Each structure stands twice: as structure tokens, then as C-alpha cells.
Figure 1: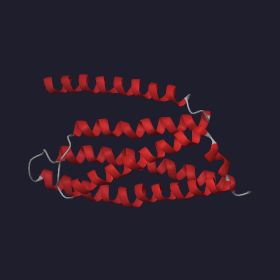
Figure 2: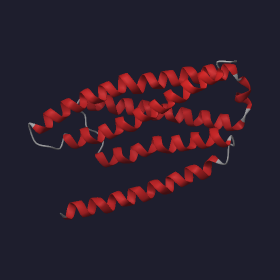
Figure 3: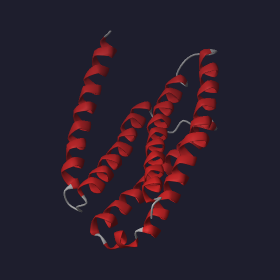
Figure 4: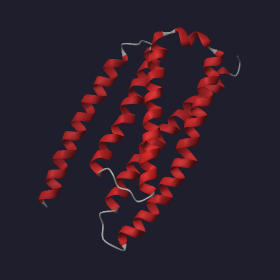
Length: 179
């Protein structure tokens, strides 16, 4: 098991790049939705550019990272099958399932925007972006603390932090609209 730490390192690297892709793709969704509200020709120029950017991010970074993170995770579980007996791992795998559901929903939104279907507002996307953050916090606390309950404190903290950010965003929006 000399190579265990290499596999673990690769798993962590691809988890990080997967989350980076998820965080940035939703930010690009915000920009794409807001670009659609601009007048011509700016709208067409921006939309075309954002389609290229989201395509590259989604298929060169996000999807490959998701696949590679999963492959290395499975490899780690094959090397350490006893982890599957631990309650914290069951909770972690539940969050991983939630992460995949989040990823698939992002793929659906990506496909809609590539087809010029704007079904969500930019404000919805800003809130949607918090989903990946909550999953990230939960998984990190679970892995570090290795306790199926202590992760709750970290998630509650990030939810409270998210609420403060949303209140700040609403306050900033009101100030911006008054100008």
C-alpha cells in the first residue's frame, strides 16, 4: 500500500478541481443570464463568448474532474473497505450523492443555456451556488472529524454565513437600484 497516499492525493486534487468547476460554472451562468438582458449587439457577443467559456469549463475541467475524483475514491475504498463500515462514511457518501445530483442539475442548466433557454434568474443562480458550498463544508468536516454528527456544526455555520451573505447581497442590490 505504498501508493495509497498517491491515490489519496490524486483524489483530493480532482475533488478540488471538481468543486472549482462547479463554483465557476454557476458564476458563468449568472453572467450568461445577465448578458441575455442586454441590448443587441452586446447581448449576442457576450452570449456567444459565455457559451464557449462554459463549454470549455464544463467538459475540460468539471466533468473530467468529477469522473477522476470518483475513480480515485472507488480505488481508495477498494484499498480500505473497512471505511464502508464507518457511520461517518455513510453520511459522507450521502453528501457525495447530493453532489452528483447538484452536478447533474448544473448540467441540465448548462444545456438549457447553450440552447438559449433562460429558465432561472441570476439571483436564483447566486443562491444555487451556495449548494456546492454547503456540500463542501459538510464533506470536509466529516472527513476531518470522522464523526457522523460533528459535521452539523460546520454546516450550520456555513448556512448562517450564507444567510449573512444573502442579506448583504439584498442590501447591496437596494443601494445599487437607488443610484
